[in-house]
Length: 274
Image (cartoon, helix red, strand yellow):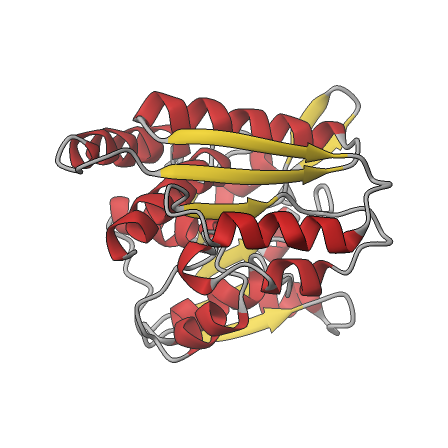
């Protein structure tokens, strides 16, 4: 079975549009983009189009990579205090000379729709209600939509990033899942992957996960997005994975579309809890 992210995203999208009709005013997302990164610019454009299609106001603040970090934080402070702004997002990655932690932590937690402030991450760790990282929530949305219950099962996660690997591990642990987190220094990666009932790869390496690393009858969630020539591919050898896994997400068209609408879900949540 192909886990169709477009189908999941469409379902969430329609629910969000209905929810917006009952709100007193429009939520607003403010996005900060620093430097010239074609991939980041493309992602921001998708977010803008999705926000406007749902009915969320969108404002982009684009800065040269030569801007002083203090000026970025000053802009964030203005947005923090702007009652018309529901959510603030700093598009990552930042140019290398910026302090990503300092900049993201300057966002007030109630407007941190990327779920990266220490308070929101701490609440997530404790299983409390907060704004969770959108990609991690997209994985949960896909599992829930297709009624794949991970509770009590073994999940192997390849990748330990703050955006995906660590958050999804915490979310799954709070759902009573047995979790293994692998990374570039993990020994015998193939063995740990093949044990998994659900395999989640978010490493950013094309075709890292081959058929011999996939357990027969397992579920494979491919979060990786890698450009190979003119094509986008995931971390998983999709063609071979379909032969072993009972369900697998494609790239593109899997986790990506659900991530964007999960972000919009956070914007609406932030608006309602303001």
